[in-house]
Length: 225
Ligand code: GAR
Image (cartoon, rainbow, N blue to C red; front, top):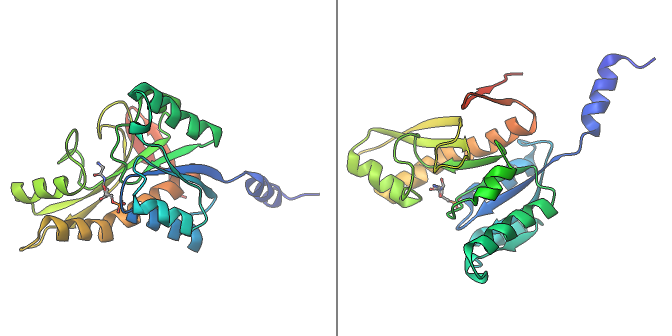
């Protein structure tokens, strides 16, 4: 007779890995952190099915190819209008049976039809402690410039689910990073990446892949195992 432990383990093993798409626009250091964690076993039960960039020159696409992952460019300017681009992006995700969409430095507004198709199934990494320095116009280095201009002593990074707004979805994980005397936006950006972003985003993906992230009334609860 099968004992329960064995049969539940077999059931878990039988579940196919969660298919994720990583959307990028630039250098792709966050993508690299995800690829590395999948390779080293820090993220389990996940397949990176595709990396999609809006920009054909994004170095992130080379990182995907080097890791043997499909690298796709879907550029808004290649389409007659924004609606056609939006449909193409959604189609690419659906054709590949994507279950989780990861925005890793993706600088295009996520189409409403993609948000609607993936409720609490799109995650974004933002380089500040939301609700500070976020929303329209806050992306990349601009976030760190604003943090330094305001003179904050602590900044950080946030992983959140994506809803219809800009950086307004449920917060999954955050990590604080100290601002230091003499920081430039570039130095601060690098510290926030090293100390926070490259750890938080893989961790959030792994938690979601293992069903450990619950959303109630716009707030996330992590189920500790
Ligand atoms: C990262 O710092 C990410 O947090 C930021 O863009 C950078 C991409 O770097 N995203 C945003 O500002 C989104 N609002 P990467 O291409 O090296 O991962």
